[in-house]
Length: 414
Ligand SMILES: *Cc1c(COP(=O)(O)O)cnc(C)c1O
Image 1 (cartoon, protein in one colour):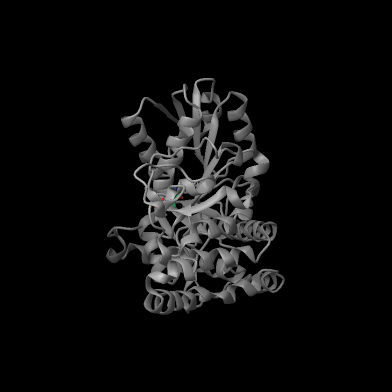
Image 2: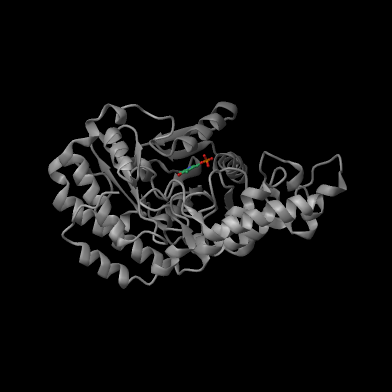
C-alpha cells in the first residue's frame, strides 16, 4: 500500500510499544499490505489453526476415520469448547455448549425461553436488531401464539411489562456498536417476571461479559467474529444452571438425547447443556473454533477492553480532526462505556468510499444504507494500523478516488 505521511506516527508507535497485548499479533496470519479492521465480521486465521486443521484432516479424519469420534475426542467437542468459552462470558463451564449457527440457536433459545415462561405471550426486541434475530422472531410469531413487540431502542425499557415472556436483545449493536447495560436491562426484565435472551455476537472476545453475575437466563454468540473461529464457525449457547432441568428446545435431535447410541425410538433429553444439541457436531468447524478460543483465553479480558477503548478513542480523535470536513459523522456513541469494539461512521457515499478504501488495503465494511464500520479487535490491531487507516481514508476523500465507477457496483456481501 502507499504510505502517506501521517503527522502522529510516533504517537502511534509509542502506544504500540507500550501495549501489553502486542505479542498476540504474531499468533495470526495477517497478509502483508493489508490493514484489517473487520475482525468484528470475520476474525483472521490464527497460525495454530492452520497446523491443527491439517492435522485433523490428515491424521484424525484421513488415518483415524470413524475411530476418531472416540479416539480423538470428536464426540465431546461441543461440551469441551463450550467450557472454554464459558469464562469469556462469565459463565460456569457447564452452562455453555457449542452447536449449529447463531440463527439456529436463536430459534432454539426463543422457543425454550417461551416454554420456561409459559402463559405469557409478549416478546420484546429492538427494531433495527441484527436481521437474523428479527427474522427468526418473526418466524416464531408466524407459527405460535406469541406477539412480537419490536420497538426502537429508546422505547425498549418502556415496553417490558407484566405480559412480557421474553426479551431478546443484542448486547452490542452490529451497526452502531452501541452497547446495552446488560445487567440493568436484565434486572428490569426480571423485575416484571420476564426472561432475557442476550445475543453476544459482537461482544464475546472483545467486551467482558458477566452472564452469571447479571443473572442472565439465556444467551448465545457467534464463533467467527472476535473468537476467530473461521468462516461459518459454529455458535455457542448458554442456559443458566437454574433453568437447565426445565429447558426444552424444539430441535430434539439424537445428539441431544440422553443416550444417542442406545438408538431408542423415544426421545429423552440429555442432562444439562447437551440437550441443546441437535445433530452430529461439525468437527472441522469445531476444531478451528477451539484454536480461536484458545487464543482469546490467553489474554485478560479487562486488558482487551482497555486496548479496545484506547484504539477506538485514537480513531475517533483522528476522525474528528481530519475527516469531519469530508462529511463523515460518528454513528457510534461518543462515550466509550456505551460502545463495543467497533466505530461506525455515517456518510451518504459510504459504499463507494469503503470500496475505494479496501482497494487501498484498509479492510472495513459497509452496512446499508450509509454506514462504514471499523472493527478494532485488540488481539492484533495496532495503533499504527488505526493511524494508517485514517490516512488512507483521508487520501480517498482528497483524491476523490471513490468516484471511480468500479467502486459503485454492489457486491453480494458488503
Ligand atoms: C453475526 C451475527 C449473527 C450471525 O448469525 P449466523 O447465523 O451466524 O449467520 C447473528 N446475530 C448477530 C447479532 C450477529 O452479529
